[in-house]
Length: 132
Image (tube, rainbow, N blue to C red; front, top):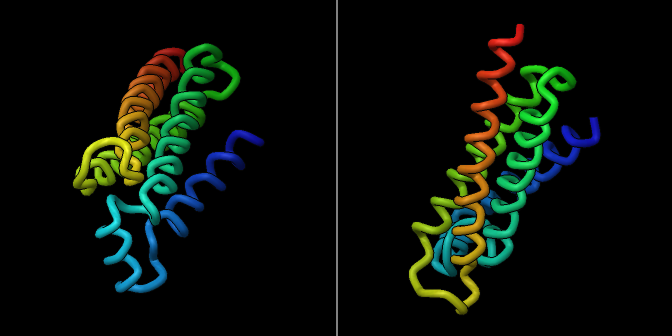
């Protein structure tokens, strides 16, 4: 249960605070500052954390296919995919190179971890389908 709570909290933080739903003007400033999710580094770090949660849950689902069942595999698949998509959008919206505070390196880490989490979640889901 604590893993689900952690994932739900991280995802809620990414969607509520990370995407800048406060006002359209604030969202415009957020995109102009580099990527989505606030001040560049915050958004990239949040999205990388969601991707990392998906990779960890996916690793646990592959290592212990009977304890979490298919639910853990689908949770890893969803978290990895959400982190992957949000990190890719953030990466696409950053305009400058590394070292300027837009979170480009964090977005790249988020994309890589999102691919890992999605792959592990899909693999665990296929294994859970075969065992049941």
